[in-house]
Image (cartoon, rainbow, N blue to C red):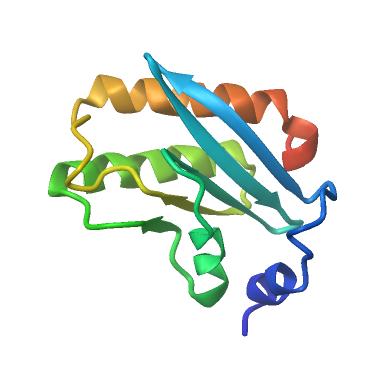
Length: 135
């Protein structure tokens, strides 16, 4: 068991303590939900259409990106790029990103859409810098 998985498993995720944050954000006309857990060495972030419990998937492995469903090749490229951009926001912390977007039932395969998705998510991260422990 890794240090990160031990830390996540020891959290009481049913409490409203300061280690967990939920927020909504908009991309064009669509509203998305997000959940984050901020630890000293890492950030676990889920963003997508529906609230799911797969955020804890990362307690089981070393992956930085998890997609709920089967992504199309184009979506996989955009989501990998999004994960790299997210990692750069957190000053060297490991970022674990999970989503239900990018699967066959998702029709947004344009680079501009994913830029707007990142910008909207970044705005929320910037609004909660203290929670995420970033300067």
